[in-house]
Image 1 (cartoon, rainbow, N blue to C red):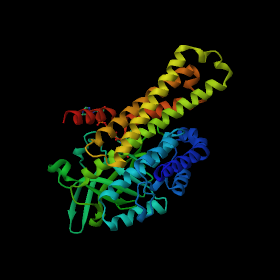
Image 2: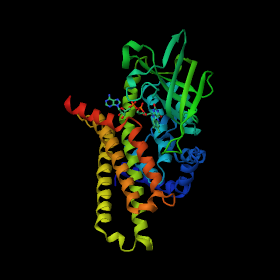
Image 3: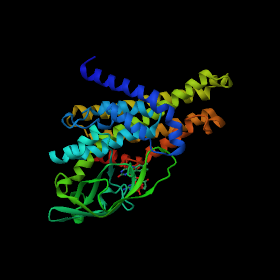
Image 4: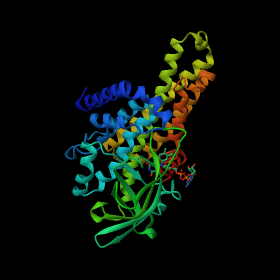
Length: 379
Ligand SMILES: Cc1cc2nc3c(=O)[nH]c(=O)nc-3n(C[C@H](O)[C@H](O)[C@H](O)COP(=O)(O)OP(=O)(O)OC[C@H]3O[C@@H](n4cnc5c(N)ncnc54)[C@H](O)[C@@H]3O)c2cc1C
């Protein structure tokens, strides 16, 4: 095994330990209460899971995308909400890593890496979800600062973050070339949290509106040049979508593992496991999960190796939608195999099924991912 493979295995082992000993015993309760798991923030911070894509010079782990996916997959096997915490931190961080000045990186990345601080990614608005190019949040330059006004919605960690990566338009007529990123720190006057969403799935993740009313942000907190945010966001999403795929693969694998163990151990299934219907379902689940995993790690590999001439955005989109569709199918069929039992909270399968639905929708809907693939093919 070469050094990179050893490092990846070591991340896998660490994530497995945390998943088994710390996350799994909390998963049902996190779903039931919908409360944000501050204890996991502390643990993840200690393990380096909250600074995976932050360069070493700013105190981070500087892992590759493959390791990022491995960690997410292992955590998602027991709790998809808790795996999302790792992804969102990376998504909020990447625009700063790609575009921020050294001063901004020190101001933001160091506390994220060293003090367990949290960051969120504020793009979606009530009138612009899939159509991200039409953000209405406005940033107006005044002397040495900007004044931001707008309303963001469905922001993961909106109510618990210390830093907000906010995307606003500085030149609305320029559409994507007019979008600029800013870092807004918690407590800045005019920044407030609106509605907290009560979701059917991924309930342990905090999802809120973020309201910006005359929020004054120093120019030094602008992420890169004016109009550079589209490129920063696309680079970010190309890297995070395989991780969302890994979250889906982990979730599906967790459901299948549970089902197989249950069928093997429990008296009441005696005889039922021999039925062809059940066997075919189990076989299809295993095959589809392996196929999704192969696609996720292919996308991650392309990103890590910077494979020339390959449309990474296409593989990234493929991995997100294929893996989350597989997770939806696998978890639905896992509930189906256990029938009445599958519907109850005596088993984690109904939670997993609800979580899978959410993964199909966020980080760009699966319909939009299909459009990315088709556009790339036809280009
Ligand atoms: C749990 C959760 C967490 C989230 N976290 C974040 C976050 O941290 N930060 C953030 O910025 N956002 C976040 N989001 C927002 C998420 O990314 C958006 O909800 C998603 O992109 C879809 O936007 P929408 O809900 O406005 O759907 P819409 O864009 O209104 O889409 C509605 C439907 O129309 C389809 N559609 C839209 N446009 C087209 C088109 N051109 N062609 C074909 N079909 C189309 C869509 O696929 C969908 O089926 C989160 C969402 C959820 C549910």
